[in-house]
Length: 378
Image 1 (tube, rainbow, N blue to C red):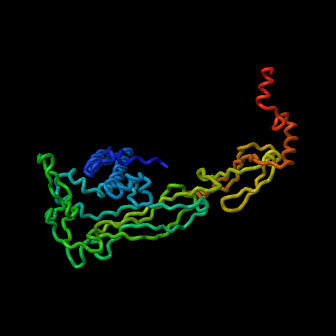
Image 2: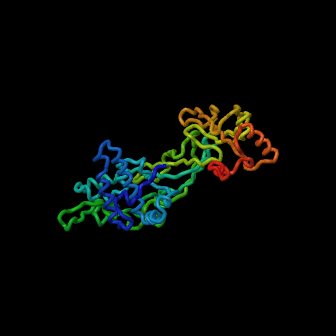
Image 3: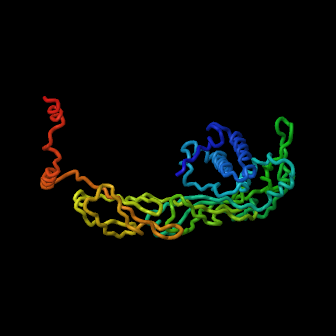
């Protein structure tokens, strides 16, 4: 798995950075690496998405606290936005409030643009399967929490029976002007009171506190195809968060993790088994039963004189290819096992054999210091 960069390092900050510093740093990097300014530059696009991911975590007090304490591990298992599958426009829309001062002018026109329907955020979660389930494919139940449209206010954010009123802060434009650099020029920013809508509810919905959304646990079934690899994602369309102003919902991305197996290891579509055999089996030859991933056994003929580490292959007993369905092979690495204890009969037989090899063995062999003494003529 690729190493994740430190979020503070991405934004060029230290852990004591203030919220304003985090916002300014992200704004600077987003403008520098925005794909519109770097057409066709994949590295710049990656930097843009890394900065967005870092800002999403560090700008949220709870996520930042977990990250400061536990690092990336503290964020595992939590649903979040999948920036790798979002375009620059979607990411810009997510943090639109901090980019308002980049585009002065066109006040009402820009406010009207924000009234358009927006696609909901994507979500990401993980599930773990076994190597046997990779062989056959499986249907898995996925449980996660997402923001749903508030059933009480139908997403309006206002108390049922009330209508929104024109925002007094921006006069209905969705934008306000602020002085910058000691009053030398004016900056146009998103209205903080109505979030750029131009209208707001005087009486927020008691169920969602005016957000128009409430968290809800979802349980869905997904089909995980045979041959899937660790880290691959399954996209479930429309199971992300609901869109704004009638926009479509985002998607759910389920990252599949493959659990370690107690016998087999995986190499692409092939699997490998390290199988111990005795000295006698390797020397004289034998027929042994080899376990396979589907629970059956396969008879393997070991030829006389087989060496430690020699590899045998059984065709078609690996994992299916995700695209073609064709199965890989099962590789068997033979490991000669040396017994730690021998019976008297076994020891005697081995001693007889050792004599035919003309090699000294214990306890008949001369001691090391005895050999040294003979060598120096003592």
